[in-house]
Image (tube, rainbow over all chains, first blue to last red; front, side, top):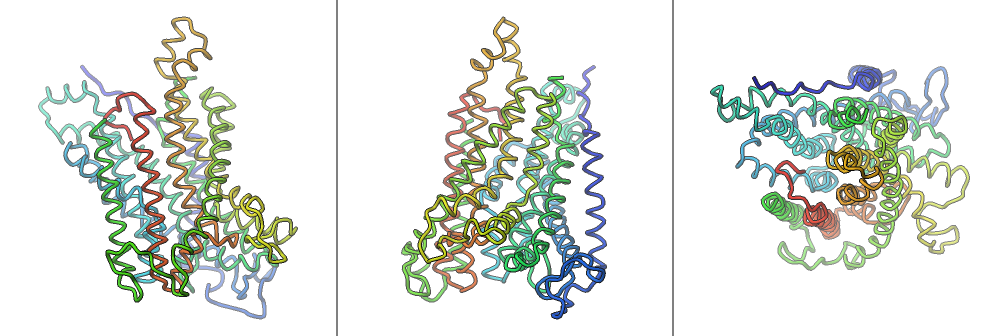
Length: 277
Length: 279
């Protein structure tokens, strides 16, 4: 009897460390959607660029806005944009990836994937901005389109890699054909690499959102993003370095945590480790 | 392999056409535009020829991109090769962890912190390309800090990719077979590992060069460098459609040309007939 090889499992240590950082960050992002210590648009021009103090725990920016509130709101917006973009990309990309295991569909999707893959998000965001004006939604759409070909590719690669000739032959003998084989045996290989890809793309998307917003192509005032905090803080960082340091630190944590999670689910990299051990 | 490269080429061609069509559509109906199908780049709204704007901006962006890429590649490849040589060993774990931390650094944040430390707090390096007395600074003065900010995270991802690729070569069956026949490890790797390693390095370099180019565009405003990224932003703010068109076309052509070189040369360097699933 032919048994397919067992599926890889996520790396326990990386998973625990990754979750230990991502869970609080995601909770913070969800809280930020409903509550910030001060309203983000509330300015106090008598208390500009204040250092951390009892009233404003992390100080204030050049308009006297509470820095902690801005930070939480920017964090929320970044995570919301990335999550929305990736949700859309996954909803479209996973079925397309399954479809792409067929030969003709594979060719068509490779061609279309190449189109999306090669064009930088910057160009898309600039085009949308010059027609509709810049917005967080424009960035979200561009990031989702950018992630789509990666999703398709990862799903397809996982399925095709799982369906070894022996397995396909055995499945045919058992009376299955075409996508029947894909659904019985191929799909099971999808979740791990798909999760790895989603977490990796999430880290990239959060970073890209902040960068595009820094250029002014994303979040518009009074909406806040970690990128707009950089942009505003750039002029005033000599007086109050926190306006630049804090968003950098928070973004670094987000990207690091989601990269750790991605690595935890990245089976090929770990398989090599076992082979050598 | 032929089909694989061929489909990619069709994709690249489509990408070029689609992007150029979108750019022309968005910017084409502007007053002062030379026409939708004209390749005359025209002049900017302040009357200077667009070509002139582009060439002065490229004189900033190209050195920045090249410097950042060289730093990232040398640093990243060194870390990756050291880690991949002994997959699973302590050195590998430490170096991989270090590389992962590097990848998480936000380039713009690092750039701004470098400006803060070197220019604002200690006044060691001026921002922009003009010195305190209005004299033009040599490239080496303004290119290093932004290049470093771009290079650090990219070095991390280059290190991880090279590590994974090299580790796969070190543990490959054909290398093990060579050792079983009595070759020493060093010999086996030099004899049977060099070409696949070259293929890995080429793939990583090709992907990241294009990425470094795009990140350079983001980095320019942080250092007040009047390059392509800066030109793009001012064109957007001033609704200067002729400049916007030229800049976006330039970005698209550069990125697609780099990808074209990658797609065409990768199979030649690798030398093996590509499996159907090569990416």
